[in-house]
Image 1 (cartoon, rainbow, N blue to C red):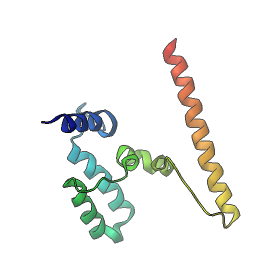
Image 2 (cartoon, rainbow, N blue to C red):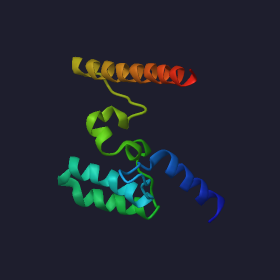
Image 3 (cartoon, rainbow, N blue to C red):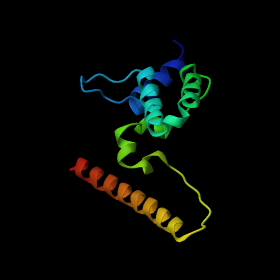
Image 4 (cartoon, rainbow, N blue to C red):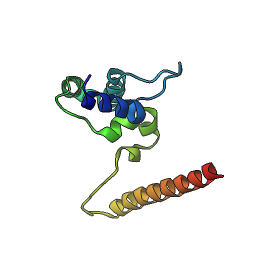
Amino acid sequence: MNNIDLLSEILHFRTYAKTLPSGRKESRTETINRSMNMYLEKFPEHSELIKEAFAMVHAGKVVGSMRATQFAGEAIDRSNARMFNCSATTIKSTRDFADIFYLLIFIYLWLSLAWVRDVILMC
């Protein structure tokens, strides 16, 4: 295993692999499948296209959304804003303002809670 492969495995283990109920971390294949299954459940009408795209992810030819890979499944089902670390829109209606403020509040609360968590851990 070369240094790049080793770093890739460490990054996957640390950032993207979910801890299973048995206490074991997911393999890369299990992580990719968790992400693929999330999309298949959400968009069953596009299952062939999704499977084709994820075959390329499995083969290492493309990289999917890392944010979606990290939080695929229950976390994104609870709040799909977890999938986005940047966002843009053309404002066409008042509903667009509501979406923008929702994301801003979500980010504000996340940053606030991260600060509180860090303070608690320092004590």
